[in-house]
Length: 489
Image (cartoon, rainbow, N blue to C red):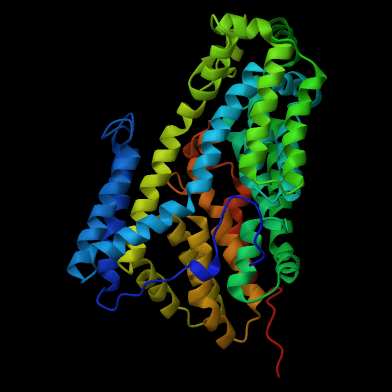
């Protein structure tokens, strides 16, 4: 794999798929069935979805892991093997967890420095409701192609777009769906993306062959996405120009708004384009925002605390709320800092525990092999790959494993069917990369909902590009469109 400085330090040679001949397919499914049953009970039958308290989803994942461990003990898997896999999983998400902490600090410091209010202020004047959603898709796509990271896109322009759209009266779920659709299109098509490098490495093809072949299914899907969001934009009720004038006046009265504030996000994006590590780029954005807060928003800092330094510290670590004379802006101009990211971080940790135990007992391998065994036709092989990626995003809670495991398992089967390796690499991305964000306990779903402040349940219906992509790749396979075969020797 051509390694880059995005969000994963994953190396394909480090991924060992554990096979357990003692474990049957039905035994491998026991933890999955119990996990899904508990999650379904909490979602559909518990009114506030806090069946076991504020951290219900986290507890359910740990309980699912405990069930998997019991299944493992009955099938001669030692505790040390399971703990080793848990540790490997946790180690793989160390960088994303650090990024989440920095994103929390970034949101707080960008708020008190006036960066986010400035983005909202100028954005309200440029982005009209009639074009807002398709424009959000395009903006997120451009930034994501340039940076190679859907996560960085959401943490920068994504936050601003949610703020602007919310001020316009647009449903936050729609906005988040548009941002995520554009961000994952860019993530798939960018040669800087880690998943875009990982998929061809697993399938046995080269990066640019993979990107060119992937465009066959990805471009039609993003076009459909833009058309749908265009239709939605023309048919939604918004607050109207009169209310926007009131919002602009309120922002201008509360903050010292200046175009100079855009130097902070521009600086962060520039560092990322220069291939600076995300941790360093985000940390630089926090430091710049602190400086700009003292220069531009001294009154804000004095109003938040007796000491300006205390106000800055609080914006980094904990809750910050700036009250304006317009109630519609008060929820928008609030941040939880690093503390606000803890729920998401705990969810990722618990998901890695469950996924690590499932991998350690050999359940992931057993389930994938069962799917591979039913692939008797070319379409069946594509369908099995898609189901395998979707299943691993659900069970392992990590998009990288949803690419690595099916990639290793299905590679020979594609060769046996005479299919060129780019068929596999494209299918891995069309179903593994993009669907991870649709699952609340997957690292991607947890991250995006935490950063954008919009729950997966709110945006899942509007993440059009993400849920259309697997159907597009299956449609092309069913119609035998652009299915490249190996050249005969």
